[in-house]
Amino acid sequence: MTPFSEPNRTANRFGPVRFGWFGPNHGQSLLPDARDQVYITDNHIVCRWAMKETIMFRIRRYLHQFDYTRKVNDGYHTIMPAWKSVLMVDEIMEKGKKIYVDDTLILHCQIANYEKMIPYIFGPYTRLVLHGNITWKQAKLLIHPGVVQVRINAKIHLQHTEYADFVEFATRHIRGIWYNFSFYNNAYYNRNLFTRLNAACRNLQDVVITNSSYDSNTFHVTNKYRYVYVIKYAFPLFIAHCGLWILMIFVLMLLSGDATALYYNQPNPPENAFTTICSSLLLFYFFLHCGILMCADFLIRPMDIISDRILENSTPDGCLTTAKSYISNGIYWVVSTCQKLNQLT
Picture (cartoon, rainbow, N blue to C red):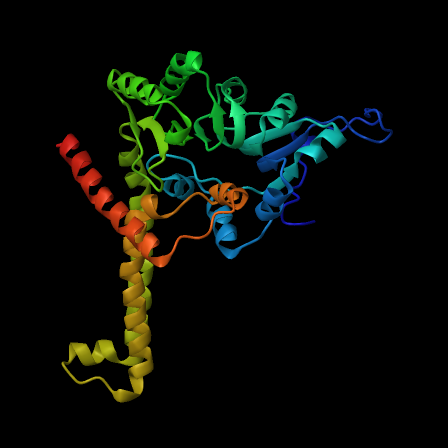
């Protein structure tokens, strides 16, 4: 079984399998194909990319299983998903089975294939990410009442007559702390849409719109106090990380004799230079780790966004461009954090 061939749990979810219930082709069961976290695309290039097993993706997929790490990883504004299986639209059409999604649904399709796929998708999924091209009517069909987190990186083909409905839908979607509605890109839409959305958010007590995240072109409609709860979840993990690093440094110092020499005010023995260097490196990475944890929401992009860049054939940013982006994001983070603290006091 390949890493992305998620085991089919249909029998457990829908009762015992009944023999003799077959599709048009003899032996083809019509039972739904049950998936937990799935990436569905109509593009073979995106499919090959999504099936790649990188170390970072494995780590993120593992941490995605736990509520604490998932909420911290999502950050203040949006959703950063992981997936266990990858499916092609043609494959789903050929088999003729509906797809039952339990947790996370990621779609990367064009309008015609969205039209084909929507009748095939059902289930209580709570996290939804859309890429490619989609109409507003199609997007609404995928956002059922149980969906909590939405990010639309797809270009929404939105008519001016649908602006009012879009604004009302996006703001009413925020029904709790963890609800969010994110969409990209301001170049796709008329300025009038953002004027209406800003006005609607100002009239609501706990709903805000912001673009202070990993990408200034992505706008997030979210709960005003979500960042407080993210910090509450992140703080125990931060303390655990700090404690682990400090413990490792202390053990190395004990082994090298540095701790004893420091306590008795004695010079360090030269034979312990290697352990001393290791302790110094751990200390350096400890501070680096702390900085990354504090600024992760502005530095770390969702992994599924790379699929859009692959199709755009965009080249990686240069070192100077990346450095400028990090510095500007860091400054913006300091300013926005100070503003939030002022709001609380």
